[in-house]
Image: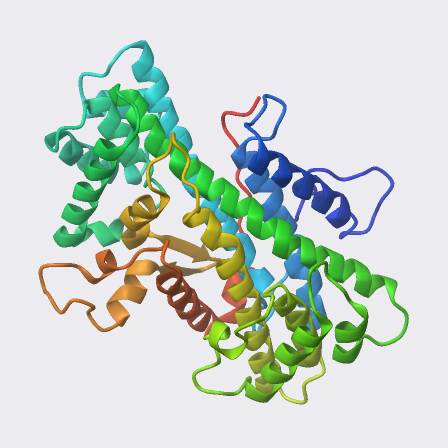
Length: 427
């Protein structure tokens, strides 16, 4: 796949030359988004998502090329994927969720002009068609039966347009999803139905957007700095040089070395170490990023493919812990909820059973993970996927590790990179 740089600068021919201006743009944008209301000149969430997905793809190929010298831009590799090969697909999933919020907003916008008299007409006015239409309509009709106004039901049901509809074939999951959506609507701030509905839609859009920005700003930005540092040094790059010469703000060289040495010693453990908080109880988790880059360098020098893959996987766990523990968790469960939102945790609980990500040609669903685990409550009356919540760290963390293990069985699948989304509402 040919990758087009959306903010390329004339006269710069390097395929990676846009990484630093991209990092600067996204880092600055993240500060604006987190600190103040959006202004008309700011990029839309989907425009941010497109830049972030493209940025991850560029990082994935440059870092992947270090681990597999035969990897060409736009090509594929059978070497175990590093974290940044997963990242474009996860970012794309967030973007698809934002597309769902865009459809939900269309329903609300049309209804503010004139209410719909049927779910069918509400979805028609929003322009929703395709395979998801039937299930969205079915979900919306059930929400109407739970007391939601027609346009509110159609809007909220539209949030799940990019989800795993197969999970709703289980009537237990379908019923629980309807009940939870209805409960969320009735708990929403606002007096008028469309205001309550908009609170639900805004909550999902902000959660996805802020998470996307936070993760790329921290982890994507760190990778850009690392690759920039790596290109600028002379001589061979070794794990020791990474640990002693590469510095990220807020990290500790001693902590990074401790994590690196533990990773090298335990990369072949079964199960692979994943309870990172118990291993390093007083660590600044950003130091794990430095350790992960050193592990990737160690993997590049490994004597066998098996040793290489084990080290890559260990590095992936370190990056993913930083991603989920420090960057995603505060977004999903903010210490101070916003007055115009519903509970982010409750909203994520609703959509957890239908979450899915296409890792290239490999599909991961949260339902597959949930069904692979022991039944939590032991009751046949509740579907296993409804017993988890993506906002709960350990529910999310173990589901991600499950996705890693499935992807490691088919490494080349992830190199079928997504085509970054375009915001249909942008001017």
